[in-house]
Image 1 (cartoon, one colour):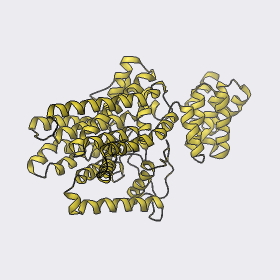
Image 2 (image 1 turned 60 degrees about the vertical axis):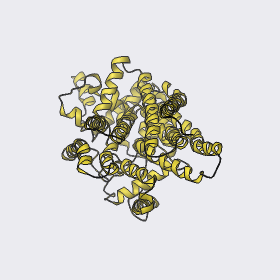
Image 3 (image 1 turned 180 degrees about the vertical axis):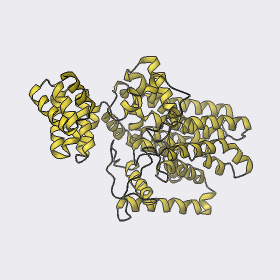
Image 4 (image 1 turned 90 degrees about the vertical axis):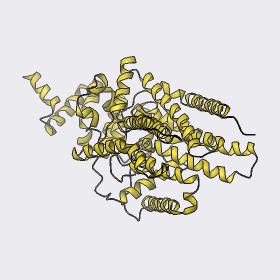
Amino acid sequence: MAEAPGGARKRDALWALALFSVVLLVFAPTLGFQFVNWDDAVHVLENPYVRAPHLLDAAFWITPRVGYSIAVPELSWWLNWRLGGFAPFGYHAGNVLLHALNTALVLRLCQRLGLGRAFAIGAALLFALHPLAAEPVSWVTGRKDLLAATFGLASLLVWLRRSPTWRSDAVANVLFALGALSQPSVFALPALVFLLRKPSRRSLAAVVPALALVATLVAASLLRATIAINPELNAPFPLRTFRTLGQSLRMVLPPFELSAVYVLPAARLTEPASWAGAAALLAFLIALARPSVRRSRAFPLLLLCGAAVAPVANVVPLLRELGDAHLYLPMAALAALFALAIERLASPLRPALRVALAIAPSLLCLPFLLQQCAVWQDGVTLWSVTYARQPDVAMVCRNLGVAHAEAHRPELALPIFERCARQFNRDFFLYDMVLAARDLHDQEKFQTLLLEFAHAHPGHPMVRGLQGKRD
């Protein structure tokens, strides 16, 4: 006997509420986390737009220092600041609430694209509890990816309603614009909508404003030659795309090789990451070309996966090479595809076993998620773990020392900087060593290091300030 539409909607709402509650429970420990010395200062603590957004300033909307627009996240951080200053709790609470909302949106989108209720719940739960979610949820700066997903998923649900109208399409374009002004991961969604709504003039008209906005944002970034539009010299297209896709697979699949910083191999086809990415792309294109796939429920999910991955695959390098948070929106599509595959495999089984199979992957991911979230609790923990994994990266070594210095532990910071100076370029750490010696009240070491720094950087503001005091 079929379930009445009203009863089905009520049941779906209850499941969405249940998933929302699960996310709040699992990520509750992040509410006690601190800011970390990994972009939180640049984007939030020292960002003048967080204290006073300048809506008439073009730089506010383009954000040249980042390479793509983060206007909407900056407005959300401004709201946090207005409500509670720079107390970390409010910023982390906002991230957790957004992730919970995104989980409910993923559930609804999976159902809209053809997944049965049990496996749509499984897909949403896998999205919620996958270890990749740890970085964007636990890291205040990860708000960019969370907001992009929120508005991107919401725009898809409005665009793909059964009976779209000009008014609903206008709402979808506004939602998409908010996502595009958060992070570029949503840039390909209008093309997805055009394909899923059967290409026509009406379908094109529904997404023209969104496509125009994407073109404007990409052109503005490229014309300003912002810092993100500088791919590595050893990473020409399409090899950089193959490498990014291959590295991303290692982050999505067990044992989940996640880190705040990635040391990428050279972009050559002889590298395992590059040929793995090329093979994955080829398999994706072959699947899309098969008539049986084009007639199945897998087709819209594959298109969603492609649309979510394309902007973060370095086809146009609008993002840094790789980051866990960049795969946040693609994880929604990958979770849906995985759930569909499990649904097909489980079709001969009893309903109870089908439900168990639907939620089992997310439960297996949970310990990895909790472990990865704990890494982001403060700067010292983050960089201690990262340094253990990446001891040959000068920036990681420096950030570990800075984290101790910001935690008012100069007695730990100075030995780290000195060790880094012996391991890497001493001049790179000299300024930090001067400050750590000063905070440690070691006058002899402070004077020695300051003289060395003044000799190497006579024009530095700190040196000029000291000379002015002597004069």
